[in-house]
Image (tube, rainbow, N blue to C red):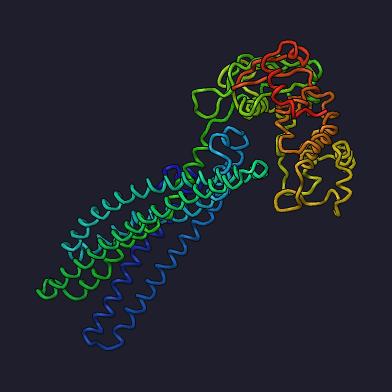
Length: 578
């Protein structure tokens, strides 16, 4: 049940050691409260004076209070460790996602990754709070209680010892069934998250195509499937709880019968019999508590396994092969890829196959192809977000195994379909790549991106809060903010565009195009798109199909060659903008 990797977290062993000592003391408090409560009851049964029960009751109250104070102390001791660990996990998880890039999202799904980073970490917190204390309680308390009972009456102790493995056996059987159900439920939860996020992101397109109701039904079916898996898991959980309660209650009843026969046969006195009967529920309490919380922690364990699996993925090494310089890309620099293959995850078939091309200086390189041809994967590879499986890459006369080089990362601006806007001021979003930029420089960059008129309408100007939960920003304005970032940091001379106008209408795209073209000057530009009117602005074009570059050359050369480029132009002629 407990993931052994939990004990590798910093600070867990000292906390667990102190908790073990407190749990050990707590077991004796359980024995003391049972003993002194039994003494008080026997004294009353034997019609002794009230004064004879005052001290036993005070000792019982003290032991009872100490027992529960020790429980609170365990939680108080564990909480700082759990809070610090989950915060560290969340930071490490986000940093790892940044290092691994889009490959994880492509493999796991956007909804799954978001769920893992948000709700998954919260479930891990619950898991750690419950599992460590329950395991220590299960490891210590029953055996201390059993030893004490053995000193009083060895036959009852032997029966309790014999029934324990039987209960554990049923727990294992039902636990394995619950684990399998929980795994399927968690997989269904991930599938639901992915479907919901993907549908939400594509909702404008789905509405335009009239498919929103179809996909609403799809989300409903997935959620209904998840509901059924959840109910099936709860059925197993309730069955296992019933079975455990039945066997423990039956065991206590059998102990009571044995003790009753012993009292009638004068083989045991009332006081030890009452102590044993009082301790019997506490003997089974740790395993019952563990079983009750077992199902509550299954999702937490699954989430912990998923997060740790991501954290243990290897990240690219040799990230300092390129030297850092300003400006980072110059007119005589070259970038060459030779027979590069790129894939996602452990898939045997590469997504990009035998990619070979070279660029020099401040070229504008268009990357075109139908949807699914590998344009975004190539952009992600050029950004260092994906590492090639094999092939050769040469940057500025330096051979590198991948483009996840720190110097290369500082040389480019990445502009995707939907640029990310942080929940911060407009100024902070504009100055993302150059946070030390002056107010004047930020305004100049915003003016070049065509944002001046819009900023003038904002009551707080550059101080206006935008992004998540703040002022809404249109798709065109978001792209202009991304452009302003490129204008502001002139040291970044490589621009990576991944379908930046895919979700914009033609009118907005035409206006944005006027603002974008000036930024292309004195930059190496990689522009991936399926809208061919952009190719008129390119110096060199890569035509992609099924992960391969099927044609490359200048626009004039490709027109003369015919083939895939000409076919694409004819198929997409309706998208041409003049």
